[in-house]
Amino acid sequence: MLRPESATGFIRRLREPPPPVVRASGVGHDFGTPDHPMPVLFDVDLRIGPGEMVILTGPSGSGKTTLLTLIGALRSVQTGTLRVMGKELQGLGEAERVAVRRGLGFIFQAHNLFASLTALQNVRLALELHGGRRRELDERAAEILGGLGLGDRLHHKPEALSGGQRQRVAVARALAARPPLILADEPTAALDAESGRLVIDLLQGLGREHGTATLLVTHDSRVLDAADRIVNMIDGRVVSNVHVNETIAICEFLLQVPIFAEHTPNSLAEIAGHMHTQRFPPGHRIFRQGDPGDFFYLVRDGSVRILDEDGGKELAVLGPGSFFGEVALIAEQPRNATAVTGDAAELYALDKANFQLALERGKSFRDQLLEIFLNRR
Image (cartoon, rainbow, N blue to C red):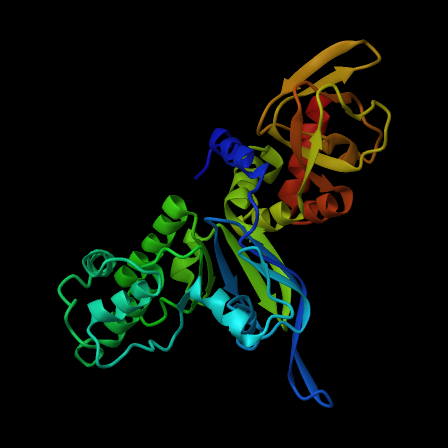
């Protein structure tokens, strides 16, 4: 589990994200005919940065594979804008889309291996599109096949391989050229736990070492822990887009707040999903004593000074992982102190309505809040 210090380090790295590898905005798509359209995607927004592993989940028929094929330039973009590796796909002809596809790595449920070629030759063929000496290409193909546990199957043709081994060859083919973006549709579905983890480890390694982004459609709960973000789709719409590490960081902070200690992981994750970031410069007054309570705060980074304006005293200095603002919300009274940033501060904020929903999670939660409120009087 992340400690607040490590969570803060993670957050600092989020402040200035690099240009996205994928940026979808308002993307929609219909099947059927103009007279009888069958909408499958509705106003989809999605951003994937270099090195990110984004897992796309949702029930069958929710539009996951359609979105994957649009990002992979396998279909024409109908509505909205979709930029992949800096290239706008809206309005591209087939030849231009083929050029985009050559720069991507694809892993689909169908292996699509050449039956007449060995595992090594199938992978080398993908590398030949990018040029290089044959010996170097063979070494690279053998390296990645070995990393997937196929070092003793280099010269076997697909018919001599099991279904899981063929799937791993297909994965090796997609990863061999270290593309900036890999699109994977259920890449671990046919694999056992060990083989599936090898695939995920390789994808993560490419992300760390080469900035390769991965969009992975899956129902495989065994690989969810590897995601930087989990995007859930239902009925053609993105219904949640969770930064996994950031959610873990918020939950770690929340667990240190006594009033949240008895919440379940699901409940904490739901609360974290309602929190948003507020950034303030040094010396900024967040709220004044006597103001109505509107937010509960966690200190994400920097520091906050709590002041008694009536007496002119500094009551506390709060750092990362500290919390404040709950008293006015639970008692429905004005703020009993003033909060001012010391250093520039980034805060997680939970609005009053969602704070009240959290109160309803259990009697113990409300009882603990009342106890804390009474002890602070």
